[in-house]
Amino acid sequence: MDAFNTSMPLPFSYTFTITSGSCNTSTHTNPWMDVRIWSKLPERLLDRVIAFLPPPAFFRARSVCKRWYGLLYCSSFLELYMQISPSHHWFLFLKHRTLKSYICRANTSSGGNGDNQTNCEGYLFDPCDAAWYRLSFNLVPSGFYPASSSGGLVCWVSDEAGAKNLILFNPLVDSLIQLPPTLRPRLFPSIGLTVSPTSVDVTVAGDDLISPYAVKNLSTESFHIDAGGFYSIWGTTSSLPRLCSLESGRMVHVDGKFYCMNYSPFSVLAYDMAANKWFKIKAPMRRFLRSPGLVESRGKLILVAAVEKSKLNVPKSLRLWGLQDCGTWVEIERMPLQLYMQFAEVEGGNDFDPVGHGEFIVIMIRGSDKGLLFDICRKRWRWIPACPYLGSSGCANNGEGAELRGLAYEPRLATPVISLLSCFTG
Image (cartoon, rainbow, N blue to C red):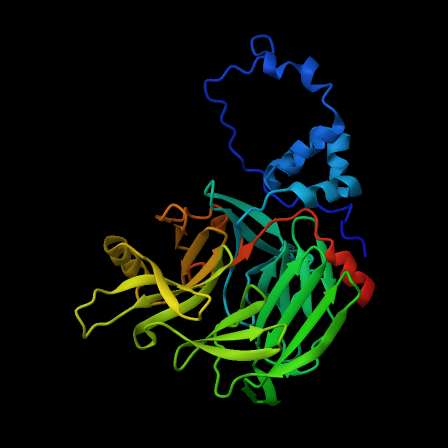
């Protein structure tokens, strides 16, 4: 399967604002922009400049000329892009309804002609520029919900009970691959995904169907393929710790391990992929936590939770703890009290979901499209601007406000593991 579909539509809605400012860009007065200089720039050097562009700017640049348009299908440019393109720590948000209908789909046909075509979209957020972009997921079939993302790919999981089918999809270039189904029947398991340019690791854990009407967290299945020729197609299995409750449904990958929250009581479950073994980590202040969640930030595992110690002389707050190499937790940040009071008023006890990427952590309030953005490096909190596409997507809200659930997403023009997976699973 070709990783790049040459008939793909442009994935971005081009609603960009171009500000010219007071600078005079006339070639007559600014020798640095003289067309006689730039027209003779070597193509190899020009390609390096283009490879550094963020995805929205790259897709705009493709309209300049035929050669630039074809860069998306040029092997030499994509190899250069993989080597030098900077990482973009962005977030992908999708409308949430229920586990059976995780994102909002709207029929594109206006008449009842039996057309099953759907319009499925996500919203890409750039935390550096506080900008929103719209992405299409039209190629993802009905009956799948987004569970995880890594390396430019979004993992979609079948929502029917039974052996789970997983799809890896790059929405920027409309490349898609379906993995072989899992061996064990499950309902809504927790999904862990980590993708590099030369390997894919997927872990599916919990929600084992022990009867048509009952589930229990019993086992883990792992999928691995790498460019060195080693592969294990759901061949690695392990048992989960006794009496565990993986209600979050999502795993966080940090340094060769997958982590997920365990409930009743709160703790953290860790799966060491190399050792094929699970173990538990005690959560800090576990008796006083509310809505805890795990995120990855700059190679570290961070626990985000509200602290409510109403019977003690400690104010309610939202705190962040970092897991140290020795297995202990250290508090690294506490939301300012005045901001927390605003946050608690908007949240109204509905809980929240954190997601981290690079130096940024987003905390989305459940049942709404509102959230806070925290910059770890600058120690700065701010509210996320409203997504401008929510009111124009044509999705029916059924009397409910739009609720966004987020994934850490790095937009990538090239995801070579799609071709690697095609060789093994084709």
